[in-house]
Length: 105
Image: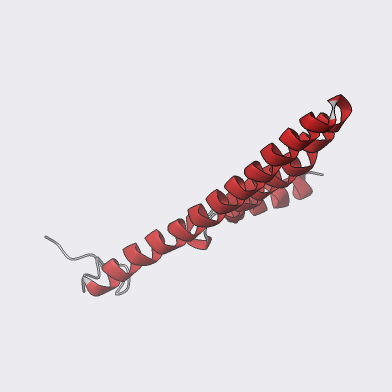
């Protein structure tokens, strides 16, 4: 039981890394959009055909908004990380990370 919880927490931490675009956040946003897409019309169909139409529009808008936001957020995090890494690589500064020692400055 404890080992399973540890593995689950490891995947949650791995899934929130910005290096790979925070896939956990992406899945969460997509899930919210899909849930709203089905929930809002089903809530409206109980009331009236007009409420169903309004719910369909609201659910579709939520699906589009959350899909675009989640995708763009993940892409921007990957790009920001890559830009920072490229900047670090082009600086020519080792800081002792690669050679095993730190220069005294």
